[in-house]
Amino acid sequence: MKKRIVLALMLVSLSLSGTVAVHADTVAPTRAEQITAIANQYNPIFDSQYARLIAIASKAKTHAPTYAQYKAILLDFNDVRRIINDGLTSSVSDLDAVKAYAQEESGEFAISIPGLEKMAKSITTITCTKGKLTKKVTSIKPLCPKGYTKKKK
Image 1 (cartoon, rainbow, N blue to C red):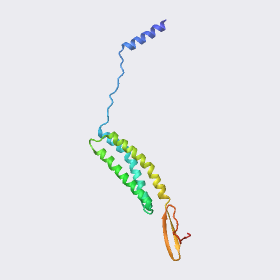
Image 2 (cartoon, one colour):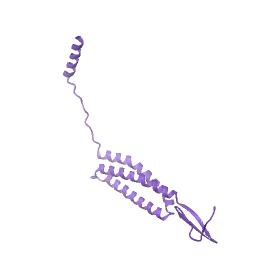
Image 3 (tube, one colour):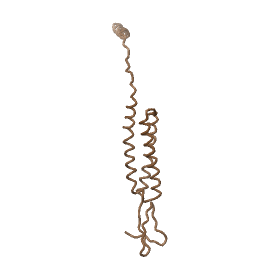
Image 4 (cartoon, rainbow, N blue to C red):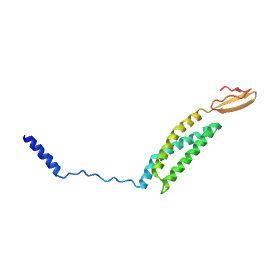
């Protein structure tokens, strides 16, 4: 019985003490802070993707179809970077849309760049001979022209 009374007194005293949960006001980040956060998140990703694209350039130039695909991806990449940078520097752009676009495009390049790297890596050059004539053939699967034989290393 004494335990019940003590427990009841404790509950009454807690409810009468007027304890109210206090919640801190949530502070929304400023536009400058949002811009900095987006830039810090996506610039390193895009910088590493650009470095990978530049590393492919010399090998891709040796094979016309691969080089055409390389140029298209590089053009798209540069356009994307320009659009994102313009969005971040504009005072009226929707930063959530800029962030979503950066996320989408970085994911797209994360898929397309490895395929281009694989294609560039598979480009080989062979030497073909026909009498005293020699020809170098560069391709993903190079074959000697009719009448030429592959020169052995």
